[in-house]
Image 1 (cartoon, rainbow, N blue to C red):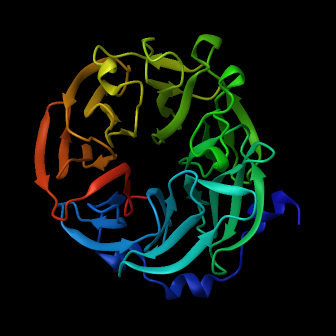
Image 2: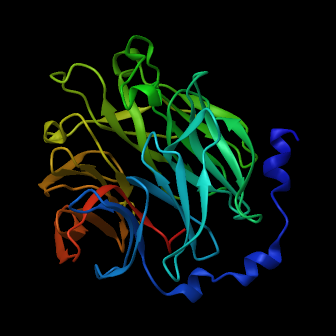
Length: 359
């Protein structure tokens, strides 16, 4: 079967979709995140907007991010690189529905996205012996059976998102890794990250690379607004004493635009997660290694301010501003302040907080 046919034909099974709970029926968590506890136990955690834990599901090792189904109360949570499992979760009950295993010669990169019709799941993967980036294709109407793969357009595909028009953006981080060497970067002399765009059928339609002096600024995590503008959280792989911006944005047909901030140094060269507020007024970039969050003007990219927030990790939209996971709980707010919510359980959060009812 040709790769184009995978995404055009999708999969049969509308009756199956109707039989499963919808987001309207679920009425349960607003967010899904991965976390660990004392003793190195690892979990998927469902949270309400009030910071209540709706469910926690044990997983084999550290998780990373998740993809929410566009219609069903269902999400797929991925292992942290170089993990080989993904868990399909019924978000109405907090129960595991299915488990995905990466095929031989592949591992997951912690992210994925559903097609707009919800029939297929695409997963970012490392074909580590090639080496090359791939997008696995899984039939969400047939028990998440794997039915093929696509090129990601680069090395080290990390986060991918579905854009408002049903197309996709993929952050090819440029970092060649191999599970035999854990998380070591093997190609610093030749590293070339890019942002790749695919149409709704999975065909690459556009790519953009950083300029030469920014080629070690790995394109890792991305978010987009309804106009198709993509904002980017970067992770610098060069000299740790070199000052570089860790936020960029892009519109198709233009060059990457980089935006610095007076408090960028507080992130320790590592931007974790990124989000745009629903009204477009602010962009938030977390720095889990530095315990800091940077806020930028959503229209111009100009710095607004930064906030010291211990273990600031995942960020997602909350009303016109953000929900941010941090040590002991959540912040609901933005650059000008907000409400701190305690979350019971003693969790240490991973990098992402995924909205699972706003897809």
